[in-house]
Amino acid sequence: MNLEKQAWLGRRSILEMVRASQSGHLGGSLSAIDILTVLYFEVLNVDPAHPDDPARDRFVLSKGHATPALYSTLSARGFIPEADLPRWRQLDSDLSGHAEMTKIPGVEMSTGSLGQGLSAAVGMALAARVDGLGYRVFALLGDGEIQEGQIWEAAMAAGHYKLANLVAFVDNNDLQIDGCVADVLSPYPIGAKFAAFGWQVSEIDGHDLDAIRQAVAAAGADGKPTAIVAKTVKGKGVSFMENVAKWHGSVPDADLFDQAFAEVDSKIGELA
Picture (cartoon, helix red, strand yellow):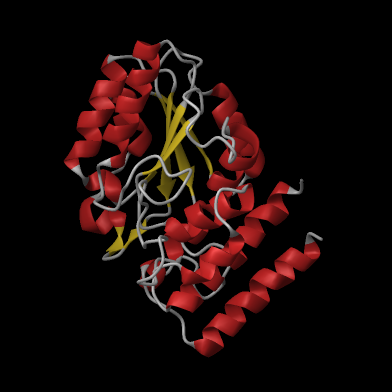
C-alpha cells in the first residue's frame, strides 16, 4: 500500500464528510490523519471482522472532535461502510460528531469532553497487565486538550505504574479554537512535562510517515509509557487552512471547498 496516498485519500474523505454535514472540525482532523494512517495500516493489531478480540490493540481518540479523521480511517480499514460516511453528524446516523463506542465498531472510548481519553487509555493499559494480555494502547491528544488537569493526573499514574504498553501522541499543531495554545495557556515544554512524570519522550514531525513509524517502533524501550510529541500543521494539505485557527471548527463556503478539493486531488494524482 502507498501509505502517503492513503493519508491524502483520508484528507479527501475528511473534506467530503464536513461538506456533507456543513459542520465539523477540519483543522485538527487534517493535522492528525498521517498519525492515524500509520497506526491503523501498519501498527495496530486490529481486525474489522473481530472488533472485540480481547487481544486487540486499543486506540483512544482523546481529542474526540476529530472524528472526520477517525471515521474516515476506520472506513478505509474496513470497520465502517464507506457509504455511511456522508451521513456523519446527521440525526438519523450512528456517526456522531464525537467518538462514540456504543455505536461504531473499532471505537474503544466515547470521547469529546476533552481531557478524559488519556485516563481511559491508562485504565486499558493497566487492564492488559492484570489480564496477562500483550496488547498495546494508543491515545491521541490535542495540544490544547493537554491544558486539562486530568491529563496530568493520568500521566502521573501511567508513569507511576510504568505502563510501557501505553503510547500517547500529542497532535502539536499549536492552535486551538481560541487561538495559539502558547497564548491561551501554554503547555510548553510538552516533552519535558511528560518526562517529569516518568515517560519516555520523542519529538517528531507528525507528517513524516517514517518518523511516526520509528517513534512507535522505539516506544516502551525504556520500560516506561511513551509520549510522542508530533509537530503538525493545523489544516495540513489545504493551503488557506494551514496554521489558521479559524479552521478549527469553521466550514468553508462552496468556492473554498472547491479549492480545497482541487489541492488535495492534485496531491493524490501525484501519488497515483
